[in-house]
Amino acid sequence: MIKKDRVLFWVLTWALLVSSSPAAAVPLNVSANFSGADYGTADMSLVNGGGSGAFWVTDPGIGPPYGANERLRVSSNAGGQRGNAWYNPTTVVASGAWTFDFTLQMTYPPGAGADGMAFHMQEIGVGADTFIQGQGLGADFLSVIFDTYNNFDSCSVDFGLAVFNNGSQVGSCIDLSSVGTPDPWAYAVGLVHDDVTGNLAVTVTNTNSLATTGALNYAVDLSALDTATFGWSAQTGGSGENHDVVDFNAAFAIPEPSTGLLLGLGLLGLSAQGRRQR
Image 1 (cartoon, rainbow, N blue to C red):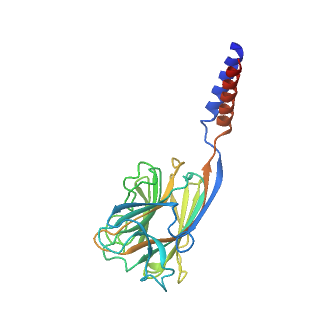
Image 2: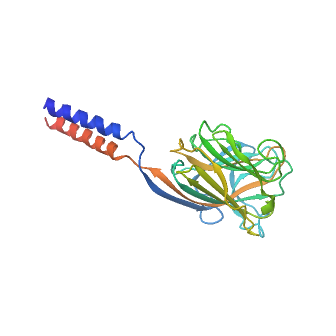
Image 3: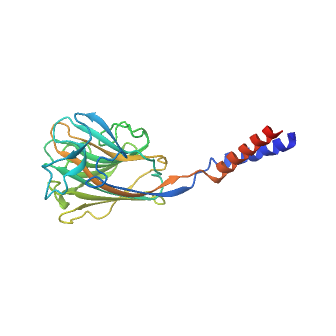
């Protein structure tokens, strides 16, 4: 019996070592319509960073031509506001290939002092409270920023796009005035990550005029983001504008236990059962 236990021990050790290799992944497709069926959903964790924070709103001032009234408001039209909204049912493998599309809307003209909003992928979790450049999100994160204040921080334009990866800006700020100012029209944002080349393609399209930036390419390192939480943050600074998310649609991968780990756990169970029988 000692010999059998020894063999089982080495097989179990091998299986657990194999399990330390990168896990396989299974597809994860998620979507939400915050102006429809998913208004007020518990799948979003709202974190108050200051002022009223993020909240669900039915705003009579945001009607046609702005679109539906219901939406997720990440920060509101007043000074000193900051909010965060994170998807909570699962984490995702951001280091793999994925696509993410969402609609944002910033009502009231930009450039008057409000800072803007950003999409983030990070490993702090659903309680994270951050600014649009991802401050406080640890060592590994991605932030796609829509900057609406002309300063020398990330963009020195009234309405610009910037990408931050692990705390550093990637490339230069892109002036988005060519696709129209954010008041009153919403913007469709498309993100595509290629895990082979490390390229992040970002497309911004005006949902009214259909003017678009086309694919803007950024070299990013997301290799450490295997258990990433995604969501948005927004802040107004010294002035105000509404920062809203209307909907999103995404295709990711989530990790599954490796074959070695499953084999190891199974052998461990058989070993325990054999000892009980003896």
